[in-house]
Length: 305
Ligand SMILES: Nc1ncnc2c1ncn2[C@@H]1O[C@H](COP(=O)(O)OP(=O)(O)OP(=O)(O)O)[C@@H](O)[C@H]1O
Ligand SMILES: [Mg+2]
Image (cartoon, rainbow, N blue to C red; front, side, top):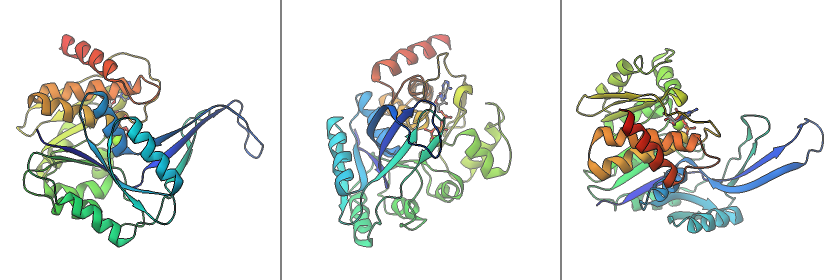
């Protein structure tokens, strides 16, 4: 079986704190805190690992925070191909849990051209059947078309999963990504429409497929997801029932679940259900979903349908 690689251009250490009665302009004290490596590609690698699938995390790290990011990755049993940048440091993103959605995200190191070239060189080594996840926005110190340039240099037959929003996504389509996973807001934004239910996303998923995407998986958070598969078949399902704990990383989990399911059986329905199960399992978990939780939800989803 092919090897799987994820790219996280600007990983982070997420300093997640909860504060009771947070007051702006005062000294607040945490009631809990954690410092955990983050980044969309690293989330994908983590969920794949939980599902028993190896992958290598690629991207850039710097400084002592970068060393800690590497240490945590090793602790998760994820192979690292992260390239160390000499100046600056891997960013720390502050997430204030008590005030839903409040974050202060750092910038991360400037990536010198020769380090980007080094990553490009690594990508040239991928061969047919390998999979490359390109997830998350491009940091401002890198060219806007970085993902396109990466895709252009891949050998024939390397499967790509592209999880970016807006024009970054649209521009990648002519290079035939194997999977794209916009959420309904990202899909709607591309076409200037508001999409709220699973059936209304299908015509727009078709447009993206017409522009070059192979499989289009549209997620709608608690409303579930819809898949327009490469062979033109459509699958849609509501999310399984459960209590939302933390939706962060649900999309990354879904992409990981779909890919793992696809590689397992080369069957669209199975891949779709695995994606749905992984996304919802993460939404129902404090951090990223465990393999156990994903399997349990998969059984539930497969049983209803
Ligand atoms: N509240 C929820 N209840 C049940 N399932 C959920 C919920 N939120 C997310 N999910 C599951 O996770 C999948 C992906 O979620 P979502 O649409 O929020 O992705 P996203 O916006 O790309 O997330 P991300 O923040 O990771 O980029 C959904 O299709 C669904 O299966
Ligand atoms: Mg997303």
